[in-house]
Length: 174
Picture (cartoon, rainbow, N blue to C red):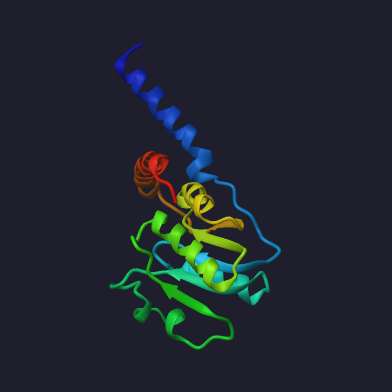
């Protein structure tokens, strides 16, 4: 087999293996959850899904993971500073990673009597987020992706990033 053929075979194998992990991860629509937890960068799409879930009665409150500074910091986000008809808590995990977010959900659940959560994140992040959240949170978990269409550059970057992050997650606890 030529080097080109072998390389193409590896690429096809990696892409095929990543399809159920990154492109078509399992997601769920809850009948009801105590909180909607928005991970990572709290983009408009993720926050909008969280607000729709609460407005439609599928959740009671929103928890948003925000960085300490920058565009996505709590003080720069209207949803974090507005007075809404439902609780919205914007907190910064320590560290600001998916593992830190999983620990933050566990602590939040303990403080707010939360036994179920809908986790909203980007599509390529759903599977890894599920693994880490399940390690730290004993309650019912449902996952939704942000529904944003992605281009080829996104998929190439995410295949590389998420694969490396999966390796790291294999050695992480809660």
